[in-house]
Amino acid sequence: MDEDKKKYEFGYLISYKLTEEEASSEISNISKFIKQSGGEIVLEGATTKRRLAYPIKKESEAYFGWLEFLIAPDKIEVLKDYFRLSPNILRFLILSKGEKKAKSRKPKDEKGPEHPQLPEDDSDLEKKLNELMVAVKK
Image: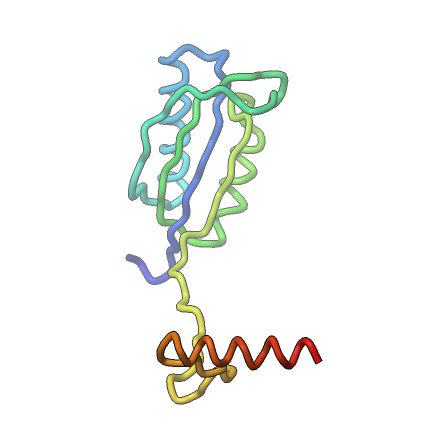
């Protein structure tokens, strides 16, 4: 991976008013624009027809697709402007796919809160319960 490029994921909804050929053309235009902006397509998911949970721009169905690409972070705003102005893209989202950082954990030497020691067998447990019940009745 190039040092100055980061990995991003791009999800989009394309108008279902388009025919399948027009939608394919729109998707290839998206890929071309990313490449023209200095990006490199890494992975592309299949585009599928989806019923939307709620209407977006008065449409209840759309073509949903996604792709992963590498590009310099300063080019993301150019991509966002292009996608915002495209009349056939109903909605889009660009996410940074940076490496996940490990959650910080307590060192193994450090102990958490003390837990009460439970009795080993049932007779010890019965004795302990009886002691607690007598203490509560008092």
